[in-house]
Length: 167
Image (cartoon, rainbow, N blue to C red; front, side):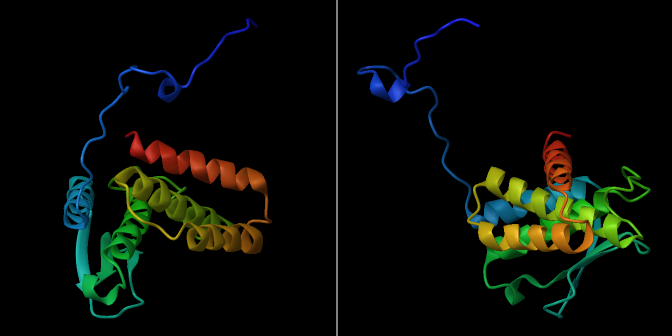
């Protein structure tokens, strides 16, 4: 160990900014980016007029999404699409991973936590407004109710969700 003196660059007069912030994407550009991301993964998609039927259909190897106008915000539509796409990544035609879909209740809980965290992390990466407390509640319900409330499950889910962004 060695002592270091550290300064915040903002505290030094005349010090140039480290990075220039790029202009943010519009909601439509974010939606288009997520659409390209899903398509690049080879995930086929259908739309439904039902507001509650967004889901990953493993047997059909298809993502089924409620039509966008049924969501209160475009950001909610994007978050839901990212969540369901995460489940699709585990299909045998892609990663063939048991982490994304499971037949046991505990496995399903872990898959839902991973998908919700992926949606949150990817949404944050895109700079989307998110209802973080709502997302946290959903993760907490899955963790407490179906996977024994083990904190390690949260860490594993977060790590797996983060890995998906680096593929």
